[in-house]
Image (cartoon, rainbow, N blue to C red; front, side):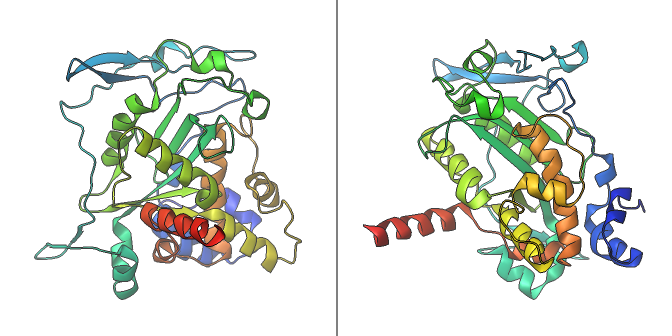
Length: 334
């Protein structure tokens, strides 16, 4: 069994606790390497991918290239220009059935995986945890996503997905993330409606048979998930029902408060990075750099809060729950 990354030694917890709490499900995390370096050289799923666009009622192949170039940026190396062709049909997983392994495997209808895990914590092993981050044209809900990055925390081949996205409008806030209108308007940068089938295929490729997916983001409830839901619906898609979401912001606040530190901005992603002594690689507020940071922060949070995999799943929410909650708040305020 591989040991947890050495950076866990910064926490004042017994060695056996690190192994018992983390290695049971962060095993293989040391295989993950950041795909962003100083110089802002990014990759899409560790390479370029072959996409499709709809034309005259049928799907036709079209290469998607999302190498980032601009001030202080280098072009992608030739090794990144590898095609990954999709199968003829890309189907989003819309069921939440779980396969319980045993001598006689059976399929269990799962209206709420959290309820099942409360009764049987072994079902948490069927979860695939994917850390993700978005950059957008602004903070209003009608703004557009211009960059997305995902990373399966268990690592392995093709465990990351990253690309710029053409929002079809100007980018007025480049001073925050460094993404300019010219960068997202380059030929080959996909629009959201082109990207969603590729995103679904990536997630499906990481999902365990009969399992479900937990997407992890910092401030997921107020920012990342609402944007993702809005963009899916704008493009005529629904979030698959076996996707759930975990917001690490409340977890960060809990850790900071228990440490006797005044919250302030300490519970922000960059605040937690500094709190845990995690080195900044790349540029803050770029999606892949923030995903790498959050992947490491998540490990420390699970240790400090003594949260096993099942405990994290219990803290998740669904897209439907978020939508219903927001609708109720809007109704109450009117």
